[in-house]
Length: 266
Image 1: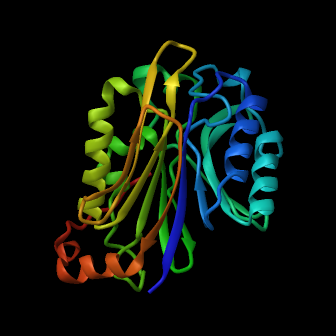
Image 2: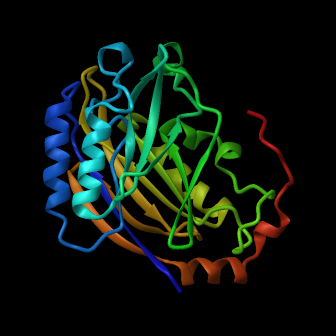
């Protein structure tokens, strides 16, 4: 059965300082000793969670996407995380899925965090991105999406040979410490209800608004067991997911067959 090795990078972010953030991430990625296939960075990893996108946004042919392309190629990895992108006068909190050959996919955050005013500066996406790696289907999501289970749910309308639409969910985030109970609880809930692995990668430290982030990055198995959890410190962690474990859970407990039929309207 196939495996998939992922590396999570939980770190402090330099507020609005792209050069410092990219240099810090490049050093951490270059220091990864284990063989890995996917390296996951937090939400808005080059800037921190900015509510004035016009000051930090760049185009898809800008320096951060170019940096991702360079690093993915040099390390022969898939590199993912979200950044601020401007297109035709609109701003997006966009997750980039950069392959080592320079090809990329992207997902625009669907649920904008109105509590912080994200909906005032950014445009919401309306399409999910489910990537494919070595036979694994990966559902890519951003932070606040975690609170909305329908958007994250396995769909009954699919043709995946495993019987389910995806095998792994990745959430990249800037989730504050004061609501970390919800973060940890919902990552586990999404794993259980979707019978899927879940990886959540969050930042640590205080941002430019004085908000503290405890990290609490996690890897959760399809039964909801926490395989990895780290809080309050910088940590680069590599873990190999097992498709055999996933298949075993789904065959032994085929709860997904009893799921409600639904359709998401964009």
